[in-house]
Image (cartoon, rainbow, N blue to C red; front, top):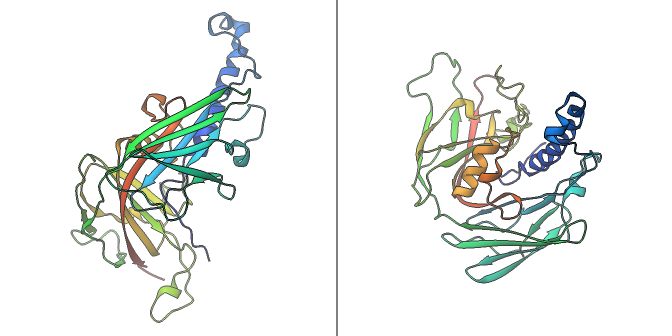
Length: 313
């Protein structure tokens, strides 16, 4: 049985570190232009002219533990990328909450930093992130970021606990989708909606009475080549506080968790650029990390369990 746990916090930093390495590749390719006269214009960087860069992904969720804060270093062009090698372990990482310092410890099991258990993120609170580390040649570097957490978002019209996928999707009733709504949050202009399949394998065990029937995915011709085809979550961002849950929001049948995030500007900008890991490009100017790349953002979140019943066995 596969029971994936997932949050929007854990997706795109590894891809970003890869971008930093690809940037070095693109520079090295210019070396080959010298023979045709372009070398004098562009210069001729060597494949060994590596300068490390540092990336941060730190996303705070109101009411949740402070965890999954990632600090990573780009890797040399000639090295094989390994997550455990990219993770920065020895940095001094701390959060400052209205003047109170919260130290963070490195977790070798997840390659992330986290606060002590029991420390939760507060709503409408300013947090400052400070990361002190030593670069490869011993030079000191400090990365910084600031976020103010939004107020708690709440359901106005929560999803139903059971949805029945239509037997004939070409003859849908009007409206054919479930309308949901949530409270507007001051300072938030865009909201992130996600659906997470909690078990992509089992289906019948959740029925009453239970059966041995297995889960299956909804196959759509336009999805097969998407980078996140096999991920159990789908997400999008919209400037609304009410929306139908369209059927294409689901990848599988069975148990799901529907979430609404009210993100700060830092997180909203990060989500738009990376498209939840599907976009391999990142605009440095829209980052929120001083002296590095990446994001330090926050959001409040509300969730609801729902079960999607198959249209046929």
